[in-house]
Length: 236
Image (cartoon, rainbow, N blue to C red):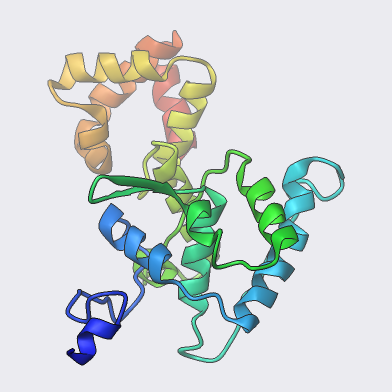
């Protein structure tokens, strides 16, 4: 018998040496969830997290709802990024498919969490529909930002997640205002008619489409062209 035959998993399989927030393909996620080892220390961290998170999403205490902030600290290489990424999979109960097998994140933890009460708390918490935005702040930050740099990154990734312009917050603000009034689709349709191109494709270069943008905004909102121009200029 060869040594490699005594292991449950192939020694020759691909193993990612570094956890990357943006690596979210099904195969990578499946491997990360499948091979994640919950040590006694991690068991304590999961317990601490879900003891705080659970009541906030269950709605039993209005004062806690939406007010949970978690700071995860540790030495370099201690597994913070990996822990956060696994938490993100759990919170949205990520569904993954590998080799025709479909699993949810919680399924991987039935045997990893030995305390039935803790597993029950986790399962109860992740049963709530949750949208997760996982990102590496260093890779998404603009190095030219000097003020409110972290806040700007959070706004950027949030706008991107909900379908608004990520790189120009003033454009996202305009889109959000139109969306709130159920005028966003009309704006996009009119812009496409005027420019011959899709709004989401061209909005990062909106300076080259000022006239089309203003006219589309006026058409969708019912304002005059001059009023639309002034409204857009105020968002700058």
